[in-house]
Every structure is written in structure tokens, then in C-alpha cells.
Amino acid sequence: MSGGATKSQYLHEEGTSLKPGASVQTISATNTWYEGIVADEVDCQGPGTYSFLTNSGHPWGDGLNILFYVPPSSGYDSPWWSYTTVRDYTGAREYILGYNECCEEDEWGDCVEWPMLDLVSGTPGYTLEDAYPYRTGQGNFNGSAGVRTTWSVSGVVDITEEIEMTGTMFDNSRIRYTVIITNRSGSGRNFGIRGFFDVNVAGNDGAYFWDPTNGWRQDEEGWNNPPFKYYVVSEVYGGGTRYIYGNISDSSYGMTPTKPDRFSYAYWGDYNSPFGNGLWCNAWLDCSAQNRNVGGTDASVAYWWGYDGTPIYLNPNESFTGTTYFFASPQPLEVQEGPSGARGPIFGVRLASSVVGDELRIIYILTRDADARVGVYDLSGREILSMSAGLAKGQGEISIPVAGLSQGLYYLRFETEAEARTLRFVKQ
Image (cartoon, one colour):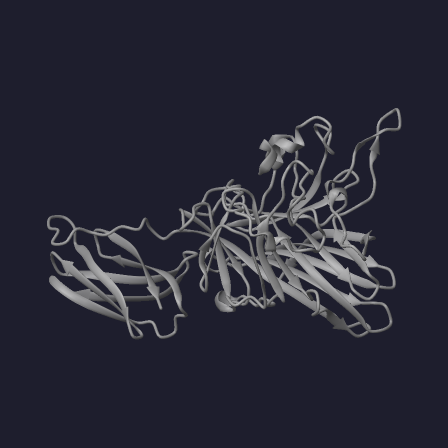
């Protein structure tokens, strides 16, 4: 971040919007691998902002960021760095879910604390308003733990936001984010939704971005009708040891996303304004056209359903649902190549792999007969193909059909009784 301060440090600076020891009430939902934390009442802050973390059973470890979060041990319990906006095109209103125009006064009547989201600006031509009344509570969605928050803007729209920890094991567990809007105005009306997510890879706020169409990037970019099904962010350009998966339109692993009209990877914001020049400080506008380097600085992503020029038209009492998913995975293994002709205790040495047509061909050497297993993983670390076979001593070749794989970057893991080797391959 510019200005020499982080979001955490900002909370503790003099003259900022939160006094030391500010109380925050949150509601959380957990499963073995993930936790979703949703603001309920931050003194006068209002509900709805959110953070995502790993839980104790996750391979990363417990309590590590997926979306930025400041824990109670730092003197705060603050998930207000990611939030949702609902736009009413017809009424020229924008509703920040979590925003509240209030302050807490000291004994002299001076405002000493006010909501963080009071710093967010509405779009010119639109009036920024609160979405009240609200109700927040833990829920159980199809057997999974979640938090549901509802708002009712009288005579206009009902809004429901759901944060759910899904799945029964690590391989099928995801964090589901859903916003449902229902037109209560009595006549046809146009709406839009923006979901804004401050991605943070286990404390690394400047996440680097990869998608199967464009590869790695660290500079801002926005896409109408995004051409890729999913993306990942990592703490290192080119891929580190941790990946956060974000969904665009990928229906694998049992997910049912709603493809956004627009998506961007862009600057979260800087300290000087405070938090200006990025996505956070604008309720709706996209800043990605500035093309700044945000990898290694402070990155975020945003989804728009019902973007400018493509609003969501709803008849009276008609609803629209926008859904996306996140999960966090380690890289399967460190990328490494074995030496040619190795002997001794090493059972298997992979010499090469390449995609020829619709087959992945793996050439190997074994120092003795062994059972081997080959797994293919996407960049987020999820296994998508596998096979097992008994292989004879010496040099040989395995062919795996990959006709069903889309173009992109994958990991191959080759395992025998004594070792496992991993390398990356590209399907053109």
C-alpha cells in the first residue's frame, strides 16, 4: 500500500475512524476447513461485511486469511474490508450492505468513532443509502453451517446475503457467497449487485493473479463477460506454495456459480485518502482501467451482476440470485525433476512428460518393479484425473487421455512406493 501504512496499522493510528479497543460483534460459521466471519454490529457500524479464513483442519493451518481480517488479538475483530453493494438503477440508489451513517460521541459531543464504510463514495448520479432494517443469524444450508443476513428496503427491494461453509471433506469443501434480491416495488425495476472481495493469501495482501486464458499477471484488469471459468491468486508471481481459487462459471466439484457480467482484479486502495484510489472506496465503479501493478501491493477482486448497460430487470416479487465460490489449496508438491538414470533407493525417476494430441505421455525409469499412481491436478491443487498401474523395472511410458481438459496449466504427480515427484505441464 502507498503511504507506508497497512490496513492493520491504520486502525491504530491517531485521528483515525476507530478508537482503540473498539468493540465489534461478529457472527461466524465454520466447518473443519473454513470459517466465514460476518459483521453483525460494530458499535454503530451495521452488519454484512465479511472475511474468509482457514480453520484448524486446513492444510495451511488455522486462522489464516483468504479474505483480509484483523483478529481480536490485535484489539479489533474487523471483517469490514470486503462488502456488497446493491444498485437500484430505477431509483438511482446504491445500498452498501454494512454501511451506516452514525457516529459515537464523547462527553463533549464530538464524534470519536464512525463506521469504516462511511468513507466509501457513491457513484455520481446515484444516492448512497443504508439498507435497513436488517437481521443476521447463523443458518444451516443443506446440512452446512452458514451466516444469513437480510435487509428490507421498504417498497423497493429485499436482500439476502449468505456465507456458507460447504462440504464433507477437504476435497469438496468450498466457501459459498450468495446474494438474493427480490423486487418489492410493485412495478418492474432494474437492479445490479457488486460483490467485493479483499483477497489475502495467508497474510499476503498483494495477491498475484492467474487465469487459464491469460496466465499470470500482477497488473489490474477488468473483463466484461469474463472468458475464463475460474482463476487463482497466489502469494508469489508464477505460483507459490498457497493458492486461493475463485469461481467465475466453473460447475465442477458440485458448484453452481452465477457467471458475472463483469469481473476485475484491481487495487484495493491506499492509506492516504484514506483508502482511496481503489475498489474499496467506490460503492460501484471499477478502477482496473488504470492498469497499476497491484500484485505485491494490495489486490482485490470484484464481481458485478447487472453491470452498467446490462441491468437485472425484475418484475414485481421476482428474484435474482448471484453466487460464487472460494476455496484455498496448497500446491500438490514442490516442482522438481529427478536425475536421469538414478539408482539406489529411488524407485521411480520421471524423465519427461508432454501432451501429444489428447494424450499426456510420461516417460519414466524404475529401478525395480513397483506399483505406481499418476494424478493430474489443476493449479488450485484439486485432483481431476488419476490412474494406478503395476509397472515393470526399466524404462517405460504411460499415456493418460486428457481430451476432457481445457487449455491451461496443470500439475502431474507421479508416485511409487518410495517417492512422489511433481512437475507442471501445459495443455495447448
